[in-house]
Amino acid sequence: MKLYDLELSGNCYKVRLFAALAGIELAIVPVDFLAGEHKRPPLIDLNPWGELPILADGKFVLRDSLAILVYLAARHGDERWLPRDPAGLGEVMQWLSTSANEIQNGPGAARLVDKFGYRLDKADTVRRAERILALIEAHLAGHDWLALGRPTIADCAVMPYVALAPEGGVPLDGYPNIRRWIARLKALPGFVGMPGV
Amino acid sequence: MKLYDLELSGNCYKVRLFAALAGIELAIVPVDFLAGEHKRPPLIDLNPWGELPILADGKFVLRDSLAILVYLAARHGDERWLPRDPAGLGEVMQWLSTSANEIQNGPGAARLVDKFGYRLDKADTVRRAERILALIEAHLAGHDWLALGRPTIADCAVMPYVALAPEGGVPLDGYPNIRRWIARLKALPGFVGMPGV
Image (cartoon, rainbow over all chains, first blue to last red; front, top):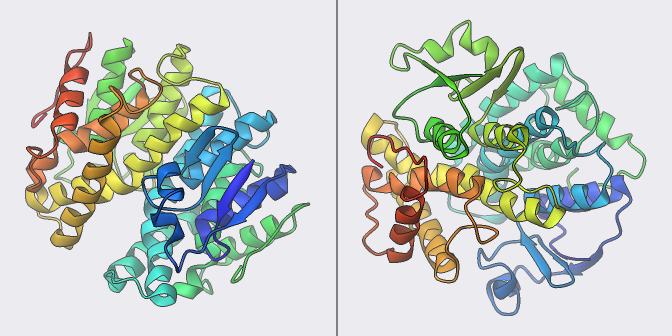
């Protein structure tokens, strides 16, 4: 399986992190993001969204980090990371939505402004970041992991842009539960980091 | 099963639509949104996000429209709407991410500004809406449905705020494939609408 990858992308890191934790082998294909390789053929034909990561498993191609997490976890077959029962699936899915919406457009977007010069409303991204970090902080007061009382793809989906929030000018000092949760993830066998995490 | 619901919410409508198409019975509990009932106990205890919809199946509670779709589809047991194989699951998941991110923050947010007076960057929401509508339009040139060649929860997740885009000042005239796809959904047995759809 090939992962078209950008080292500095938190979305790509979600996939590299989960693959490392679950022991799934991926062939990493670095993409020249600054040169816009992902906006041109052949990559734009694999993902018309013009974004990374992209997973290619033979002829089967997936865009979107969360879809790739779900695919890899289901293909891996170990229900530890993504259960099949409706309640477990729903509980994990809540956090995949949070990752796609509040995290992507909060701390993820704040970092795009500060680190990559994207022209977004910085104050709005910081406000969104602080709202979602407070909600996660409160949730983690009573939970070691986001869902199901154990590490799942929910943690792999949410952690990267939370841990990278300081790169968007959003410090984590006021969120001790979040910092302890990140430390728990870092202590898992197989954990890999990325620059900034 | 109880659905804490707001009739004018596209997110609540996703759930009502899928339940109607799949023949799942829900007890609809209307929430007084304008009075902020969802921001106070007991609802804020069910969903600390302070948002609707919320599903309560006995003691099991889920926030987030997409998590509820996944739960209901898996609980319903009919793989037509959400398959269990990794590739099918991944393909549907791509569109749930699109719904949570690009749709919510594009046409969904544009409508929040025009219809409910939210103070967001309107030009940004319209730009996001036009980008994602163009991508969906292109996808539907070669597909009758978003995923798997048949109606799935992907269509239920994405259609509502696409069909409601004109309420955010984003007309659908330039998107004939999208209009045909909405018409196909409307022709499905059991289809229900909402104001504006």
